[in-house]
Image (cartoon, rainbow, N blue to C red):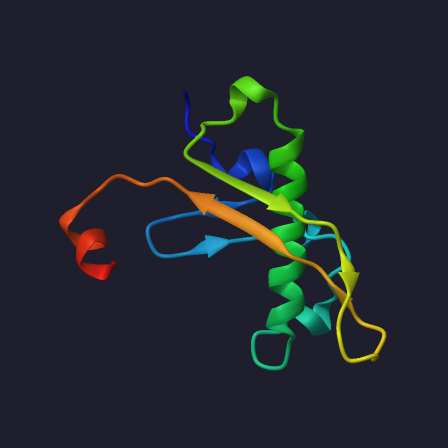
Length: 106
């Protein structure tokens, strides 16, 4: 099976030897304040990124999925504590090649 290229899931993704760039247009709902490098909200950036990856992965045709990794979104629930927050859980799984490095890292 072919590997999934980053721009298959995030159409405006670009990269070179030293920089990875994600476009806010690939992460709907995020604001300029939330993505600000020094004062933003990394938790919200991560939540929206995982949500978009899960939706884009799910939308791939079965033959386009490489089988070495998957990301799923579980059903949301009300977070404990009575503060009215929604708890969203994402489950990534990766099957990677066995190397001396990842064996040492456990």
